[in-house]
Image 1 (cartoon, rainbow, N blue to C red):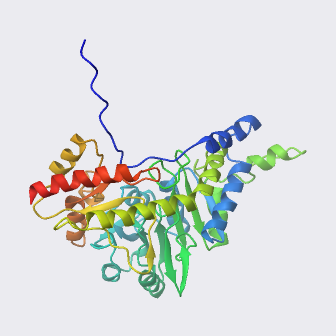
Image 2: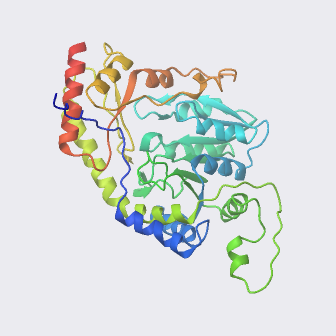
Length: 390
């Protein structure tokens, strides 16, 4: 009988870090009998707000619903325009359409893959209601340039911070976390590919108390009295539904896991930054390879590590060669305007850098548990494949 072949080495592009602490945390609400939105959600919101330095934090079912509610609070409605990037997960553009508004796509800065402030100013019209800026793959966008533009034109500035939990910007001489927020609201994701996860889920931080009150109504069908208040009252309370709301709640099971993940976050960020620095040292000698750029005023969480390929290298063949060697990758961040759901939408501004970033870059593995041996293997495979194309 032939001996079984050894298992093929497989290095994922991402891997959530979950352990016994999260298992025990999930057992708390299960044991209590209260598993929907309740005391764990309230505690998670408080702890997240303290971590980010935000006045208010409201937990919701995912980052897409967070973006929808933030835009709604900003008054975005039918026929309005919201300036954003096509170069982002499609949820960014979709959240604008949920409001009946039109996403106006502008190009990115090719060094950071983030919205180019100069393109924003050019795109403002009398119908513009807000700017939706993405902190792409954990790299903070240039809020110090974007905020004056938004304020000068009376626009709301919403931050899509799905990937930027723990990212920081140098703001008036002090390092401050993305999510304080520096605009009007910041929206986070707890999807398993993000730095911390609750399985799925989201959070909205805002400086506006009234917005936070609206988020809390909208996420629970505009119920006049929360179910927690009804259940803990010794008197009969009949709730009313004061407007059109949504079922955008986070569960207590998810929030309990999120509280443990938040405790892990500082050490996770340290490790991810160590791995990112090590990639720079190990990959800098590959001719034509473009490494990520972190501006002096930014600190990324390195939710993903994105490489620009040498001119002679073709994206899909390189990715297939890496896959054959057991290294998972993803193409550069998608462009929504190229998807069937958006091809009929008017493209008001050319997007050459966005399209090039999608076509000429790839994301390589980076996750907290990644060992130096894992990283060395990824680097060795890249050297082998890219040097062969030179």
